[in-house]
Length: 619
Image 1: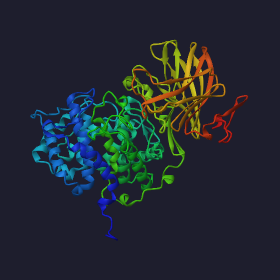
Image 2: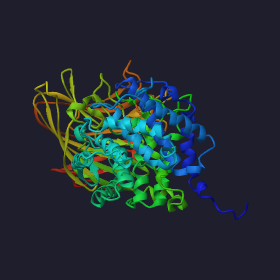
Image 3: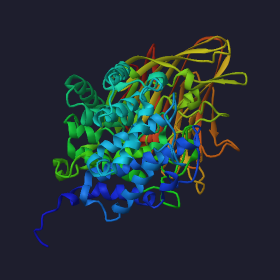
């Protein structure tokens, strides 16, 4: 009807329809008798009961966000969904039922899923929890009490203990020591804060996207649902989330992608997690219209790709199925941590956000950069693409099962993807420096940031291993201009070795064959399907070579089935040396032309047909 005003439900339909697209295939496989969703696939390294609980708890978070947002406006099928999910919860939490999930025990995965579950129950308290049979509520609360004081990993997991105790307190099941436990866990979590909105994840020692879908998502949701009378703590999390969102916005490329970085990459669009609670709490520094643009583009970057099993469930991978991206703790249900990416559904139907028009692409994806000096991360956006430069974040020595190389590349670019490490290739060469002492390859691990400035960052680290006496101490300068990266290494080696510096991995489908061309004496250019990966050695390198798919290793690239990497090779003697090079990834054309280099004493001047003169040492 002409002039009919848009209903509140219709205003958020752009998001609820995307969520329902993911939810419906899940609701068709609810199995109340076994207290799980019948998702068939990979098992984790936890145990079968943990995987069964995970199959319920993670999809339930998506359900809770939708139910809490839509309420009575949920689809007609919800009556059946809610009945089955209620029975799942009642059976799984019931120690007398054959499908009992079991108690939470020290360092067990259960506390993670229980913590997420109580947050979900709080999100849809009125529609789901309050509607449960009183006996089912009692059974659930009895089960939650098994997590009251269990040992948890010293990282973001302590939030789960907080959520469980806060929920028990609301339900009249609190104990005299609960607040002391909550305060103690908060003190530990808050001690992990560094600066610029960024946390290091406890014993993991890493700073990555867990800041988005763990620290800030949980901190803000605690404020939203449990922090009414704790203004100081609420302000702590709100202030830091604002700083974090100001930097992480530059991770989002104009096509919706983000750089592949860190662990749990199969959580995909969970990076959007902080935006919903931040807007609801009034601490989001980004205009609503631009948040909507970011959310639409980021969700569609994945939802319009081949990320589904034949049954319609999320597969393990990034833009398609790729089991190489799985962690040891990943099971078939783990992918639904991505449900946090729908956090904007925390905003009620009458929130002004839903009346906001989507911002223009050019307005949202402006060029710029942000440094998070305290954790050694720099984010930049140029020409719609984005890049993360890592000069400080790493995984701790006690968690090397996650592979150091997920944090040890110099840069991570959204359009390029990365090569994933595995047990037979711990240090892939893309955007990495590795040293070979004979047959022993050594890569970068813990990295120390030294200096940050406009268009550059500097760091120091050692290529080595505790079981080998030989090593290379390195100080690295990374500077950037558009799609080009300049890298300089000042190295001090204990013995003769061979250094290799890799360029961007050029991913490609099976139907495409990359072309190789040599420009000048050493520059190596690889091209395929509209992308170019080029490496231009300047000083200290003797040759170039190509590194690619390894026979029998299976797929390792995050975006494509195959990859190839240009590599510069520098045999060096023991002692001090200097090597530098230029690296390009992007479309062919004028920008992909090589630079001419001129040195005058210690001054390096680079000239290019498309760019102004560049001295990367004065970036």
